[in-house]
Image (cartoon, rainbow, N blue to C red):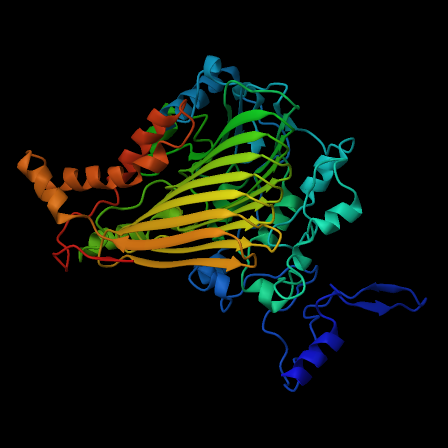
Length: 578
């Protein structure tokens, strides 16, 4: 083992990323090859996860982070096309503005002007100024803010440690102080507990695998929402961001694209910059403009403006949300995804017609990704976040990261995922503590119905510098049917020796005793189960901004109709595992 360690040190894979090679002129330049890592000592093998052309690990079916995800389905579906006039504002006819607004009201995401500070609406990735309300704190970026180096640096940031340097307060710390504070991800808790460069095997095993999609978003995004809250500014009303998706994704030559079996992609981007002593609440929603179950001809006649693309196309939604939270700033962030329509109910039954209907549901070809990357850069910063995933897309994945960098910071995460039909869903959370006496609290609730699968991995890492950290993580799951599947992997990585950390994970079914109570009050099985299910996730729903709580509650309850179990369970008694 000592000889192996010596050879690895000589290879110097921990300090050179990527390796350099001499040019003809004698200068040194980076060597970008498909696999740059050296052969493992005493073996003919290269490490299984290589570095791609630009130094970012790409998804592989055998990788731990992608093992339970439908990566095969993602690879087989092409999303080569962009919406027509992508990057340009969406200009509407006056008669169509009301049609769009009414549709958003119907979806429950539209807020009255007197209730919001700003409301920015994007349709298929294009900013719609006639539907939007901008303010001094929230607006759509038309071009890169080259006069703001702090924002430009944030736009270049990638998750999973591929951007090694952590953001810091502007002008607050020198380079020597940053190094002392452990601002380099690869060298935190050096020398015995550091993760090393993002391309090393040890680091890869603990990543979310979303850095490559964040990089794709940076390359392809054309409309960026900027929320820039000045120092000491308290934004009294919430800022609303709506990303609406139509059936055809706004693509040109929809019929031709559909015949080739291809799809369309868009890459929404949100950057939040909360300066010291500021306070803001953000409501971020992703919704469909259509319910795909309605009659297409009827919709075309009633809402011709919305139904300009009469054919459904597979869509790849690749969102990237970044938050920079400075000293004593407080950010409340609510994220709700409802794209992809609704799943087919009762697919767990043996009815072939129901199962065929779900198998042919168009939205199963959709892929919805969202990366939420928060950096708390100043002391006493607070980040309160709510994540609700209840869309009907075939593949859903959320990567949530909060980097807690300075002393006395607090992060609260309430998350809820509803899956049904034959969906494949995935949620990854990383709470990275490197600040002294910081606090993080996670409450995650999942309901898995039909024949769907859900994979969850929650990671808490506490660096050696983060003494007296208080971190809690609790995930609870309701497996609603015998055909539903769940993989839950909570994990703790603790390098400090003076901390308080807990994590828990439970999997259970609905309680028969509670159902009996509902029956005794004249409530049938189905309604009783729905009440149980809503009671299970009510705490998460209540954590959203009060302005939108009632609407979110109604939409959550409506979604339960499609995942509630209609038959009898194979196991009649209650069961739970902890």
